[in-house]
Structure formats: C-alpha cells, structure tokens
Amino acid sequence: MTSSKSRLHTARRRARVMRACSTRAGGAVVALLLACASAGCGAKDETPPAAPPSVTVAQPSTEPVTRTLEFTGNTAASSSVTLVARVEGFLEKIHFQDGAMVKQGDLLFTIQQDQYRAQLEQAQAQVAAQKAALVHAETELKRYANLVKEDSAPETQVDRWRYERDSAAAALAAAQAQLELARLNLSYTEVRAPFDGRVGRHLVDAGNLVGGIGQPTSLAQIDHTDPLYVYFTIDEHDVLAIRAQHASEEPGTLSQKKIPAEFGTLDDDGFPHQGYLDFASLGVAPTTGTLQVRGIFPNPGTKVLPGLFVRVRIPVGAPQDALVIPGEAIGFDQQGEYVLVVGEDDVVARRRIVTGMQVGERFVVESGLAPTDRVIVEGLSRAVPGRKVTPVTTSASGASSDAPKPSA
Image (cartoon, rainbow, N blue to C red; front, side, top):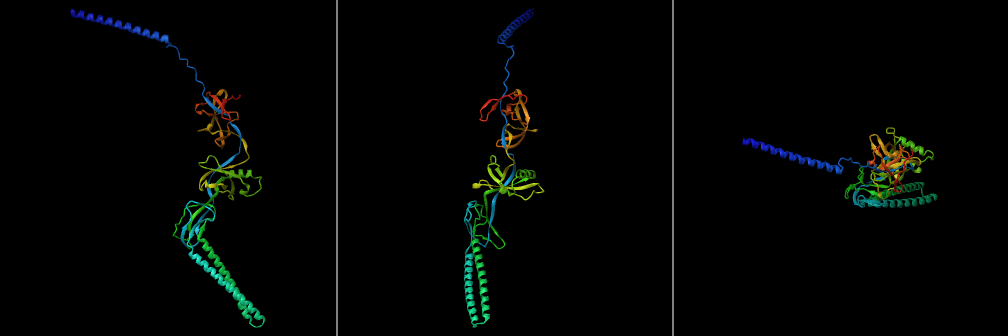
C-alpha cells in the first residue's frame, strides 16, 4: 500500500515539471517571433541591379596603306673568298686574329720566301745575260753588214749574225717572262685580303707545308658583308603582280629600276633594314613555280650575319585608303577572326572580319567592318555578346569620352 502511494506521488511530480518546461519553451518562441517582427525578418531583400560593365571602344581609322608582299629568305655575304696557298712552302706566320675585320691589301699569311727570292735573282741574272748577248749580236751584225758593202766579208757572216741577233732577242723575251713568273711566285708567298671584310679562323697552323702540287691548301675564308645579300623566292602570281606594277617603266635590270625592299630578322621589330632588288633568275622554275630574287642591303658594322633566316617585304602598287584597327581588338576561334562591336542600345555583338597586312601593331581590315563601327579595344573579358555595356571611346591623343551611339 505504501509503495503504490509512492509511485503515484512520483508520477504527479513529473507531470508538474513537464507542464512548467512547456510553459517556458512557449514563452521563448513567442519572444523570438516578436524580435523577428520588430527587425523585419519577414521582409524581401530589395538589392538594386548592377550597372553594365565599362569597356573602351574605338572606330576603325582610315589611312593610306601600301600593299606589300612578304617572303622568307636567307642572308648571304656579297663576296666570299676562300684563301688558298698558290705556291709550295712552309707557312711561316699568321698575321691576323681569328674573326677580325680586315682591310683590302692587309697581310694575312706569309709562306717561306727564301726559295722564291733566289729564283727571282736567278731570273734577273738571266735577263741581264740575254741583254748582253743581244747587244753583242746587233754590234756584230752592223760590222759585217758594212764589210759586205766593201766586199771585205762574205754574205754568210751577215746571215749568221742576223740569226744570232734574233735568237738573242727571243732568249731575252723568254728570260723576261721567267723574271715575271719569279716575281709572281714571290708575291704569292704573301697572302693578302682581296677586299674589306671579316676573316674567319685560320685553317692551317704555322709550320705546316702548304701549296703542294695538285693539292691546293685552304688557309682561311673571308666574307664581305657590307652590303649584304638576301636571297628569297616568290611564286608566279607575285611575279606577275610586280611586273604589272612596273610594266610602264623602261626596260632595264632590277638594279637600275631600284625596286625597294626591306627585311627584318627574327628578333627585329618590323622591317628596319632598307634596300632594293638587284637580281632575279632568268625564269620561273617549272617544278616549283617560283622565281629566285636577290636584294642588296647596307650592313654597316656587320650587324646582320650571313646565313640568317629573315622576313622580306616588298611594296606593290600605290598607297590606298584602308580601315586599320589595333591588333589587341582581334580575337581568333575555330570560325576565324572576329571582333566585338557595340551596336544599338550599347549591346555587344560578335562580328566576323577578314584582316590583311600588318601595319606596325595594327592590322588592315579587308571586310567585315564599317568606318562607323565601335570596336571594343579594352575590357574584352567584360564584354559578352548580347549584353549591354557602358562604352567609352578613346581619341587619338589618348583621352577618353563617352562614345556617341550610331544612328540606326
């Protein structure tokens, strides 16, 4: 009986605790709702719309542009000579530093000279002996000719001394020829620069025997690179275009016509080297349909070396007006070249274009644009076709202003 009363008392006490907790939780919920109502928790977020992104636009400029043809060529020395030993002997001395610039007539190599000096002296002595023999024969011929007139000598003596005189004259001519050969061989012992240029490394060290009979010895190579040649090939279509441009001119060689040309190396900005065409092959090669052409260019200080790949440009025709836009405004994808333009209501549109030659850092637009189009040149990453932008145009001086909208 006592345990039953105890269990009943415990149950009633738990019921009172649960009712008290429920009352407190309900009060907390009501307080939370009142706080949210006073703070406006149920109201919608009214965020203003974002402004269109700002981009820089510019209209294509109309400029006189000369159409040009571009090719790839190679540089070459205008003169190149391999120095060889023309007489046999030991190489005594080398008079230059490898790779040095030399002047015409500078002494480069010396070959042993003793033998050729002795041969020269021997030839000089032989000439002197033959001169003496000729003088003696002429004197005797005159003496016997006078005696024959006085009937004091036979005619055969005159004929003999006439023969002696003619033989002495022939021997003197042969001795003089040997003297010239001896002088020439002695001069060959000194190898000199045939022109101004740059000499390469020496190919034979001093002390070696050079100039053996039937075995010419190469000593060094010297190149003349000012002016410099540039060889390149052009196809037959470009040949016809260039010929049509100069058809009205009088016939003459390329060097006489002075057709301008320019080239740049791989690390040059543009085509800084100016020259002209001076040679073309006799005809177009039927196997390749190309014509080899050569240009000549000043090269002071040997700034450009022979054997380099270069870009060659030749102007064709008179200057004509063309639309030009900056290169950074042009994009490329699988469909080709395009630009982004700002049209009516400042909405961005994608425009397909066809570009032509490059003028500095800009490109000629052959089709796809009009002079009044507003081309986006800066802020391309913020421009999306079909969406609005805030265009700002740039003037030639670099200042910016609001771009006028084109009329419909």
